[in-house]
Amino acid sequence: MKVNNIIKFLPFVLCLGAHPTLSKESSSKSSSSVIGNSISASINYQAPATGVVGSGVELNLGHFVRFGVGVNAYVDSNTRMNGLQVAAIGYMSAVAWAVSFGKINFRKAYNFLNGTDPDDDMVAVLTPFADLKFFVPKWRLSPSAGIGYGNWIADPAGTTGLPADKTTDDYTYYTVGIDYVDDFGYLGAGFSYNPTLPAKFKTTPYVNLGAAFRFK
Image 1 (cartoon, rainbow, N blue to C red):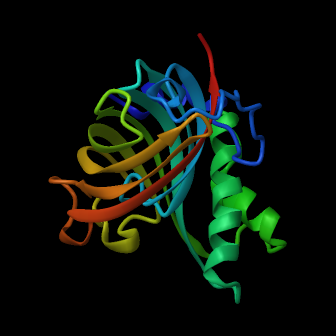
Image 2 (cartoon, rainbow, N blue to C red):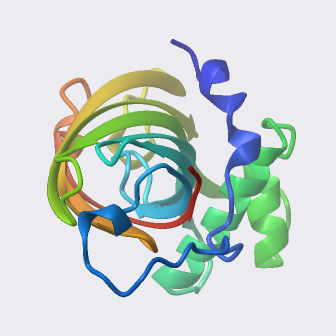
């Protein structure tokens, strides 16, 4: 599987600020108000491991399975911004890169949003990804287990401890965690295991937050 197989889905990646209208059930806390069949837009931290912050869109089916695609980014620039500012601009640049099918250069987009020269030095890693997660049907607080595919793209090679002899490679990762799901969407956290990545990426924590639009 190559990166283009994921990129073709990425125009559907949404910014979390574009909140969908959430369906409202009765005040009953029955299992029928668990997220169910829906589409969700999410923001994530270290999911997958080779990026820091990103965005995705997921298809939730039958209360127990979620398929998602998205992109996340790591950025290290020579600016005096705090980590949250760097993450926010990296996130917006990654979304711009994704929805343009890679035609918008990530480095130039980042420096434009940062108000710096388009060719200023920086290091970055973009990771388009696709993953599949499973849950206990209709449980609001459920353990999760999943498998995913990521394709990191480093500029320059060797960024953040990734292999110095290549600028891109793909990898399979596995996740275990716990999710709280409701008709609003979900909040999930856990760990990913990345067997083919360098040691610093082998086991990493992750957090996901998604807002959902339900359909019948």
